[in-house]
Image (cartoon, rainbow over all chains, first blue to last red):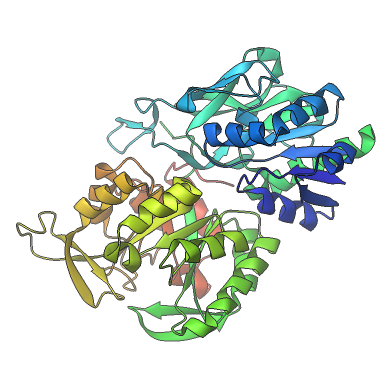
Length: 216
Length: 260
């Protein structure tokens, strides 16, 4: 059983539906005991870092997440979940979980991506919304059967920047190269939405589930 | 230089009483199938997103749409948006809970712009798309761009300049705009490029071009000359003239980044 941590974060139902489609037993829960008993935990999220942190803290789910990691329970952070595993977010200057050291930064509206028909650079639009490709930097169980050039679906205005470059598993370019996937065995974070990234995204969720099964 | 972010192709499915239709100039709607099956087909073909537009007239039958949304959400794993008949934050909540990522508001936002702000506050800007129906008119003091917002499927002019309205929607928290040219819609002669470009240059948020796609090169034109982030399509794929793959091949030939 995979537990999807319920902190009213928006995309949890989409994550559940994707797992159901893959015939992976899963539930959405805010019950600590159920979370601790699960083979692996998905930490989803859409929305603002500050509100999410306030909610996690008030429900003591921040310490639950830290305990999960301490016990080496497989964990996958998605989008906002990916961002707030780091120390700090520029979004409303929010101190975040600090499970992995690093910060979350805002895209700069003066950055450019591609050129228009007159060869003038085009400024990026924020949020970074839509399909973009990933480049794999390091092999990892979470990226099994995923190739550089595969595309995934993004919606975000801030991007994660883990301190330890060795943790960067895949990157994407939007105005600049940023971290798309980071982590180490059993603790991963993806900035895009695997639950909305078609077959590539489903493969990543399956990879996580396979890892959880093997680890338990 | 080619951009990294892919330009999106978004088929739009008009749904009435749970069945798929496509209106030409908002008249003579013809039933052409089951929305869930059609959505699956486009998902397999590589659609980047899907829009469902609920044109169900009676309020009692609205529940049918929510069932459609739920079934779609269980079967396709790309983002999708639901528009039509969204008049309140509660309407938005119902379709988002049923599994849509985004809702599109149109006439209701023109009548009550605060709905955009409320929706963005409750669900985040990324969930709120404002659909704009636009008609070309003579330039005037009131309509300096020469493009006016219309509602009720094009029957009622609002006295609002389209470019001004686009900026206002962005200010209120819209995450995306879908700009539909009433003049081009159904003509198959191409998107209204001038309008699309004007709106794209006036706002920072992504803009979807809508209305007029008849040939693959029209899509390329919308995202290059028109500067749109995405192109909405309907009859060009609904009647099997082209597949989404054909359209993407054409965009690739124009050196446009698309999702394979």
